[in-house]
Amino acid sequence: MLKRKLAPKKAKLRSRRKPRQQRSVETIEAIFEATARILENVEANELTTIRIAELSGYGVGTIYDYFPNKEAILVAMARRELEKTFRSVQKIMSADRQSGGESMTRLAMRAAIRGFGGRQRLRRILLETMIAQGHSAELAQPVERIAQHLVGNEIGEAGASMRRLRPESLYVLTRATIGVIRAAVMESNTKFSQQLLENELTELTEAYVQRCLESA
Image 1 (cartoon, rainbow, N blue to C red):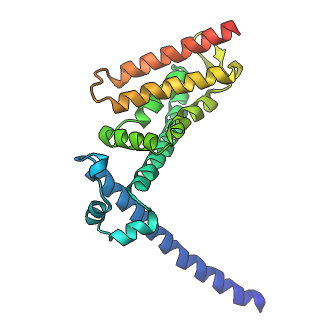
Image 2: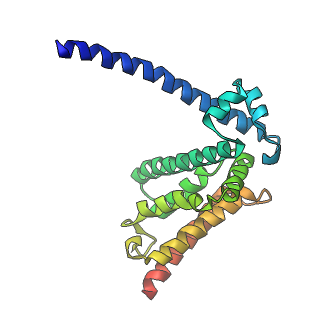
Image 3: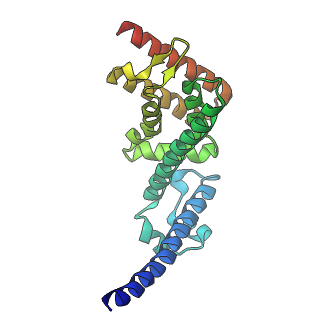
């Protein structure tokens, strides 16, 4: 009898929680999209929660239920984009590796550049906000995770393994890479294509790894 009483309760709790969680996801998505659309035309200092509320269709009070201020919204958006970047890197590297013919380093650079692409104005503002709010170290996470993925894989014509890199060398390499990509996002006057950027970063990475291993 005890089991018969408990089973309906569990089913009932699950059915209540799922719609509530879905509504939260939809609310946050609406807030993020409204913020992104506003920032297509204005800078971060002109962004207000009132404007976000008007465009998202939710009240200001609802927005404050999720975020204490507009900066928190931008930081949350930036963190989500960083996670999406790494997921896209994993997907591209996994799919492209099966086709063969290109080094893991090139695939990694291509995926990282693509991950930071699209809505450049918005991405610039998100990067600026992360730096201003003291979260600049987080910006290197996608590249650090790419490096971890590459560890143990053979890169470059000489078949150099990143597993043998010293921690300080790996630090310099990841920061140099994210610095170049970040600059390409934040500097609107960049004239070269993503393909050229991919070529340069691939050459930089493979040459630097090879030199570090030769001098070890």
